[in-house]
Every structure is written in structure tokens, then in C-alpha cells.
Image (cartoon, rainbow, N blue to C red; front, top):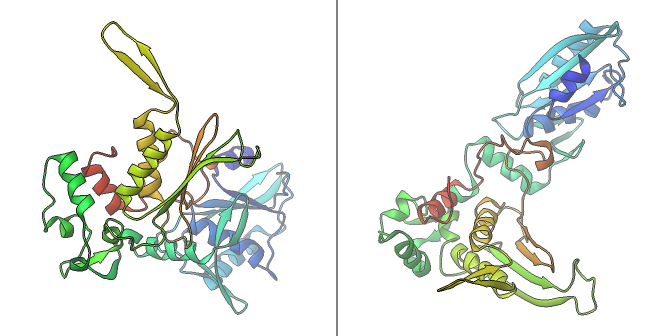
Length: 341
């Protein structure tokens, strides 16, 4: 039964016994599970998954509930389940993913939020805490208003691209309707990312065509490199052009025409770059999207991890829920038919 429960737990930790004198050793897992995708703590089981048992399950259960209430803020949702395996009494603490993030460990003169990295619970860096705060207040980075006023900036590329791809003109009222500005004409972060001027420092893309199969594997290791910054549509076009210019194109002749066969399908490149642009974490300071081309592949790296927490390896790739870190930007790119829902 324990093996089945462990297999069902996306995240899990094992504790031989309940540590009451130093409860931070397991409470930080409660914090990280609440800040991420949830998880389960098994008490009375060794790291090699052998049942050791607890001497007083009732007393330990009461202590777990009390310490969580006293030292984790806000109070997370959890369920305590008594179990038996091979005649040993055990406890399973199931922690649900929280809606009021971040969840802090608050005791011993510290107030720390934890996240999961692999099988460890580590202190969340500042940019993760900021994202958790936005998530807990039901906000996203791109919806936040800024100190920039719309009339001080131009949107020529956005308006021209919108007309070209939709056949519709981008009306002044659309800036408010689409979430790029508020009613007072103040831009949101989404609006700043769409200006012709480079107003968001992290809105950058570094592209490199490497010589060989790895970085620095050959003396003249970089055959081409470019750096782009500014409007998201400009970054998309520039990234696509860089990959196209550094790709080979084969072709097949037909009776009355020929069929080009580039190394990388244009649609696949567009979808990958669009996803990198709209789902990246713009809170990570000093970051940018990277395109690395090698002899046998293209790698596109976007700042930020899985929006729901955890790592991609822990998910069933066929049942991942659609979650948008930057919903305003995603909606705008969908309207311009760059992406599908």
C-alpha cells in the first residue's frame, strides 16, 4: 500500500521520525509543497522506503498539526492520514498546492519561503518570492501598471503587424480592452513590452550559431552571433530570421515547381519562439532568451521554470494543464494568430 501511495505522490519526502525539537527540517517541505504543486510527507519511513514505524501516532499527529499552525503562514491546506504497513504505524501528511502564496516558515527569528528543487526544499530566491506574491494576489507581471504613460511612446510595429495579420486596425480603445494600458493612459508591463522603444531591460534575445555539436567544442567556436532587444514582435521576427539565415535549405523538384525543405520548419520555429516570449519570467533580473544553434539542433532557452511549480520531468506531459504566466501577452499574440489556444 505504501508503494502505491508513494507512486501517486508527485512530490514526497520521507522522515524516519517526527522531529519536534527541530521541526524546520520537515516544515520547510510543507512550505515548498504549498508554494508549488503540493506533495506528501511520510513519517515513520526511512529514505530507502522501508517502514520503521512511529511509537505514538496520535501524539505525533497532534504535534504536526500544532507546529504547522504555529510556524507556517498563511495556514496551508493539509490532510493527515494514519497508515499501517507490516504492522508498523505510519503517518502521511498530504499538503495541497496553495492559492495564498507565498507560504512562509515563520519561527526562530526568520521568515523564509521555500520551493522544491529536485528532491530538496530550498529557500526561494527573491524573484520567485515576487512571482509567488503575484500568484497569491491573483495577478501577473504583465497586468501590473507602470509609471510609463502611453502618449510618451509609439506602437508603430504593433499596429502595423496587427493590421497585417488580422485585417483590423488597432483602435485607441483596444489598448485598454486588451490590457496594455489602464483607463488613465498608464501602460501595464504588457504595454511596455510592445512599445517601439526598448523600455523593459529584460526584453532581450541572444542568438549564437556554434561551430560543432557543443559550445566551444572547436577553436573558432561561434560562426555567428546577434543580440536583439526591444518590442516582442521585433524579437520574434529577429529570432526567426537568425535561425533561417543560419539554416540550410534542401529542395525537391516537381514537374512545375520545387519544394523547399529547410532544416527547421518555419511554423515550428515560430511556435517555439512565441512560447519563449509569452511564457518567460520577466521578473528574473538580468535575464534574456537564448537561441543556440548547433550542427544538429536548435536550443531555445527561456528564463523561468514551470509556472505551476516543480520541474517538467515530474509532469505527465499528456495531461499538463494550460497555464499562462503572462495572460495579457498570450491573448494579444493569439489575436494576431501567432499562437493557438
